[in-house]
Length: 143
Image (cartoon, rainbow, N blue to C red; front, top):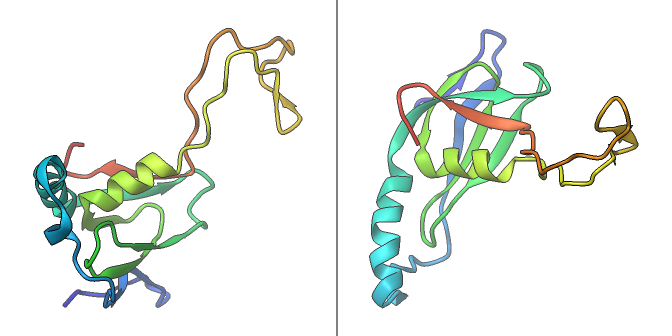
């Protein structure tokens, strides 16, 4: 059972639905090193943490996504609104923070989508980190 969250205007957010997964749990098929690695990883990913959702485009943007990292786990449907703090599985935080980065700006790049990278139109001297669109910020946890 989960508590539904809603804004003053009635918009639901947070964990909005949980679906049964028809795929059987895959832990019994793992052997050796994979089993040793997956056990602690799965335990860490299922740990519930408090995190604030941020969206680079502003407070009007939303992120709605399904989360199911391991075979047999229930499929969770989440909806996030920027500026709100959620209690979410750490695995979901890692997935959003890792997969929603825009690609790195590579060495030698002059423009991106037709827009110059530097004001003087010179190429980049070294690689630069990519920007993010969706991101969770710690609100009582560390990754």
